[in-house]
Structure formats: structure tokens, C-alpha cells
Length: 394
Image 1: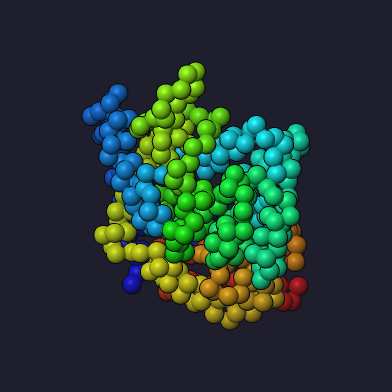
Image 2: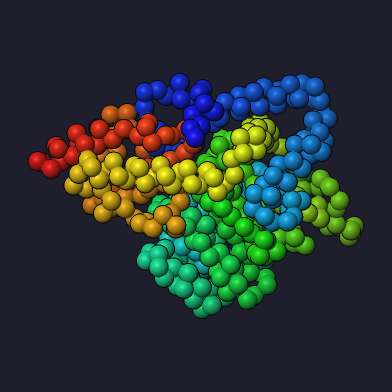
């Protein structure tokens, strides 16, 4: 079944280009346009009372839908913010009294986290332990060993690595390797949420899980969330007035009060337009009976068709042999290819762009993402076949 009819606005705006960067900038379904108007109408209707309205209607619905998708069993532990970095830094702010605190992470984390911990490491506020994500076959073993050796205060890793697409499919083994109850465990689920079926039921009591709508949830930027472990009583030093929504901690003299659920990690005033868009998309998925597993099957079929057509192009550099993650069972919703160097990668990406094939790259890895607005018929790699003839004779 094709789903292009859900994305006519973006498809018409970008035609005749082929957009293979949905792992970074997913097209928004048409329903999000009306959602933005609905936000305006509600803001005009409720004015100063809109915050109470949002937290009584919009927020609980989104919490329930996200909790159901991840099988956390604790919808009240979902908290929202404009970006995941804001939420992450609140978790890190609970470690302020332990500085310098130890962080065990990987060499394949998104730039904002890598930049932040590197900056704190410069100021000697963080002891940083970085584990290589490759070779993938031994990642879990090496990562859990680093946790055992360094007894970290914070463990941070991705569910799906942004630069390769490799899926860490055994999250539980990593979480269970952390024996210190005071260690914060944060999973970056941005490339997993609404792409790969995720069941957090066995670890929801222990982990902070970060994700958002910019990628596979298709609601655009500004709609991010974090699952907070139930019964968490940490007191973020980086906090805002939203953290007082809901029942507060029992009064204690001269102490700032926090919500008793996930909202204790909330910030302050934000634009709720993005949450309206996210709600519209999740409602659309329900209407279209689009489960995460169904979306995943559709995308993996697209990847298989793309690889078949790519090999027919016989490009000397861009082919299945250069694929970073070969096994579909541990591959996210994009294909990453390792090319000889950064310069070659940039050259090929630029040539593809000139031919109307929009993709992106990280270092010497070229990435092609796939989504519901693609079909096997829409995958046209004739431009790569033409490039192959030139590159083979160069």
C-alpha cells in the first residue's frame, strides 16, 4: 500500500526531487497544517488560560499515545520540551554535586551531546569514557565492560546510532549491567521512536528515554519528550515553572517544590504548535492503522528495492559492498555507505543533489533515508548509473 497521498503538500513543494533525508528531515503529513491552525484557534479562544487547557487535554493524550507506543506503562512519566538537549541537561544537572562526574558513552552519539560532554570535559567537570560503536558484533560486550570498569555516574547511548543506522537491539543487557542504583541511564531513542518497535516495559523503571517528532514521528521540530523512571525523586538544578504543574512534593522549609511525576523535569514556556502537529500525526497513524511494525516492514522493503537497483548501477564506490550495516534486522530506517574519504563523500553527495537526489553525509558516510512517502516505483537511480560510467573511467 502506498502512503504518498498523506504527504501531498511536501511532495508538491519538492517535486521533482527525490528526498532521501527523512532520517534527518522527515516530510510532514498534510494533517499537520490544520493542526497548526487549530493551535492558533485554541490560543485565541483560551488566551491566558491556554496553559491549563493544554495540560488538561493535549499533554495527557500525547503522554498516553507515546507510553502505549513504547509500552512504558507510565504515561504520567512523559515530559515534553522543545529539544532533547534541554531534557538531557536537566538530567545532568542532578549530578552537579558530584562534579567531576564520570560519563560512559560511545563515539557515535549525536553532535549536541558529544559537544556538551566534551565542553564539560574541557572544564574538568566530567570524566569522559568513550567506547567505539564498531565492531558492532561486540558492542554490547565492550560497552558493558566499560560500565563495569569505570562505575559511571551517567551512562548515555543511542538506541540506533545516527551515523551508521546500527540498532542496539538488546537494551536490557546494558541497563542490567549497571549495578549502582544512583547511576543515571539515558537512552537516545530519536532514531528508534516510531521507526523500530520498542518495548521499554522491562527497563522503564530504570531509564530516561529521549526522543522527538523531527524524524520518524513526523511532527517536525520542537516536539521532544523524555520518559522519566517512575518514583524518581531527583531535583534538577536546571528547572522552570512547568515543573510545578500537578501535585507537588510535600512542603519542606526553604526548598523548591517539584511535580511528583515526569513533569519534575519540565522547563518553562514553549510553543505548543509542535505538540499539536505531533498529536495530529499520531491520530493519523491510528486512523490509517499504521503501527510501528507495519511502518518498519514498509521501509525495509524500500531499502531492499533500493539496494537491488543500486547494485545494477555498478558504481565503483557506492554499492552494497560499502554498506555499513549489512543485516536488515539490526538496521534503522536509513542506509549508510562508507566511502574512501570525506572529499569523495562530499563530491558524490553534491553530484546527487545536482541530479535531484537529496541525501546527506556524516564524515565519510553517505546516508539514504526512507519513509512512507517513498514507493518502490518512485526510487529512480538512473542518475547514479550515469555517475557510475564517469567514475569507472576516471
